[in-house]
Figure 1 (cartoon, each protein chain N blue to C red):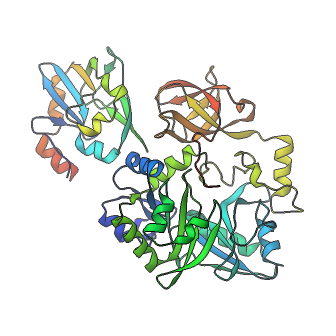
Figure 2: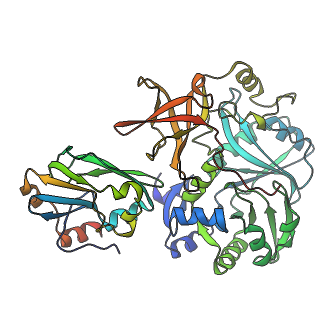
Figure 3: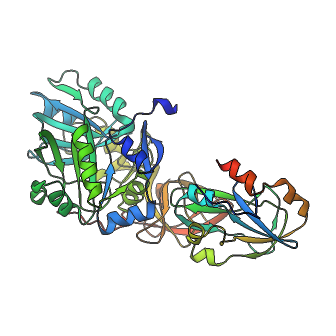
Length: 125
Length: 368
């Protein structure tokens, strides 16, 4: 049974979002990292890239497969987690501690379209 | 394929009980990984792991014309073989395309030859073998359903097979030799072969024995390994997978395996086409490519020149677990196949530079 953290928002493509002010921190869920298996590469975007809700911003790769990363919100990337370039396995070890990008949101109301922890738990069962 | 039509090996219940991730492969539902591909891969490189390879096919051939017949359908030359030897090679179509790659065992289980073929190709191969046997005095039996197979691979494989399975004959076997023996009252074939680049054995036995062998290895801490790491291991060792690096479209010559085609033989199916390919070259050939970046090339990604024109396609690619390098096999226009040629691979929206390198990425550790 994969872990779902209370207080986060979740997308159908298995990204999580935590919000501080107008900044959204985005990572992938425990369910996603379990499905992927050993993660060997995170294809990170650049700071200042624009992202749109539901659109691809990068990719996460396990030994076997590559999976798109989709941004749950629209805005501009203000920070990327450079640690993951050298240590992608951190996503396996601590998926909720391993944020991938921080986005300055242009439309925080998009958060309402995401699932809360209870809904995501049902979604992944 | 419909999930319900997938075949199960005699170890299916074990895989499920171990919590393996199961996935279709070659018409079977097979374990892809148990603990994780990296841990399993590393176990085989540094200690010992075991694979359920019961999906592989076993086809026996005997008769007055057995040697002539097998040599007719096989690219390699079996005439110099001694009993107890194993030879790798291909069966080809008249146009040189590959029907399958396989192992030929000389004199096993009272038969003249045993042909071990890929799971996905068992029915196709059996039909091909039958169709081409006309005029030869041979009998042929597809015994794939009766035999299970476990591969025990890694530097501790010999010790494991001797200590845990009491198969002392393992000590006498060198790479690509085998012995018929008895185990628990049933026949068993012990073969010093594998598909990992490490020393190891492939154990063929009836289903009941295979289940006992698997259980005994498991309680003795042999790491169960899935097809996920079987692929990363064989890839590093430069070994082809039928369907990716060999196919009806990719001949052994195109794939760089002409050492397994014996052109001095009078004839074999596909010889004329393969000789022509060897002498005049082929439009495309299989190469190894290393990227100067951590990005991972995957099957189907385009191989390009600096100007963006496509000159090939990736067949298998990984970030190599043992070597920590981003590597792939690719079919490319032959003029770009020389070692050191700069090539680029398009990965999603970006293009990454690399160069042609030798296909055997990993230094193999066979017991010669």
